[in-house]
Length: 188
Image (tube, rainbow, N blue to C red):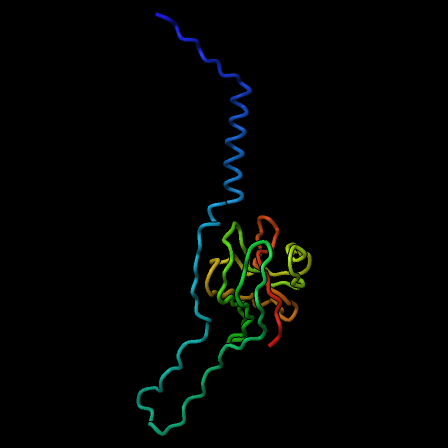
């Protein structure tokens, strides 16, 4: 019987394989390429737009109706433009009946990605590559993680934020410091 030749694995080859496997794992975690094929749709109603209450029981039919509660008011609005990824939809800055504010994204359509945020900023909105990286240069307030890359959704503006200081909204990728899309806010 013949003896087979023993395969000798070189130590440097093992080291290279470990580095390649670790690099691939890190790359998958960091870039999360599968998100490009995953859509998350959110359909939130604007807060404070509930149906008017009916008259209390026992109210005479000829009684004057109760004053209607204050309704949300759009303070500023803008259309999203594309930056790093194709992005469209409408952005509204809305003052609610209690005086608080929300940023509302309506008809949002953008790519999904890692660590996407909604930022209220004072940066100018520029077309093309010139607008990709400007939003972290000045003042901005992160309103939280993007809830979904499609649909309509609301983001509460903290009470201590002066909304008059901000002129734009960005869908910001915090991991890669780039805007997916942004809207200039025009006062209503």
